[in-house]
Length: 407
Image (cartoon, rainbow, N blue to C red):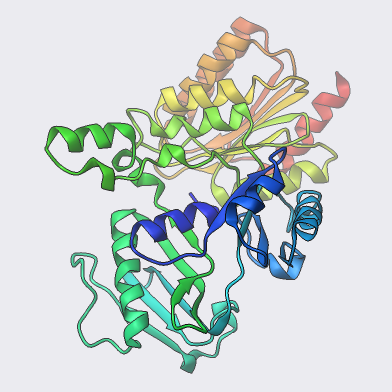
């Protein structure tokens, strides 16, 4: 899960990194009250979205008084930034900057270990910095201290140590400060925070985890409850009820077994249950190419159990105005097609949709799974076409379009 800047700032501050004072405002909030609470004249008004390049897209504005702040907030709430809805805005103090640095810790997927990245050329995308101006230091995940004698300025080293503690304690995949600035009075302050949490560590960051810590006599206050973070979508807008419900699927008792918690609600009328990340994106294109519009994006993978697939399918099919269902996926390697189709059948038995359904799937136990679907179609009088690997995924999009046009 990617955090908004204001959420990431909280984690940085928790681990001893200085951040500017700020107030978060949402639609309908009293902007004047938030501005007065800061007790400042010059402030920075920053759109809270999950994409980068806010400044280049007019999502960051500098203001000198309340009138300018109100105008900036209104303008930002009326825009979308790189396709993302702005649900909240951070109003923060304006810092007098002497120099800007870049500092982050992430995973080096080639070396399979964390890496600290530092550059004295901060404030720009690290990809735009020439290689010889970037310092990279591989870290040992088993050690809670940075290596001795690493080549960083002493004041930056203090922040880097705190960032490493944040990276470990909060189960992150990325912690990035850009820029990490030195002020004109010598302070080191994080002006931005980009943090990505490892979703698989949710069980260690919840109320139950805090309770377990208390039972063991440990300090439960050090455990961040991830449930406090606002539910969000990849599009940046507030999550719908269905999106929130789907996100809960992978947090249950079998959280470790496959994934079925990916769902983005769209404005079309064709329900989708897809398989395979890259293939599912290609299938969205194929659907649009034949003149149909997706009602959602979703995909399951990693051999999820029947219960997870049932929960996902039931939510996908609950949207009103659906005109068709397309269940399409690649040839599975280890996902049990029969097991996952049991979940689909459970949902179809319950909902008994009258609209056309097209299925394209193959893999382990696919014949057994397709028989389950065929039997389900017979007892519920479903309008369904079932295909295996003998036909391409994109061809079945046209099959669905033809069925809908005949209705």
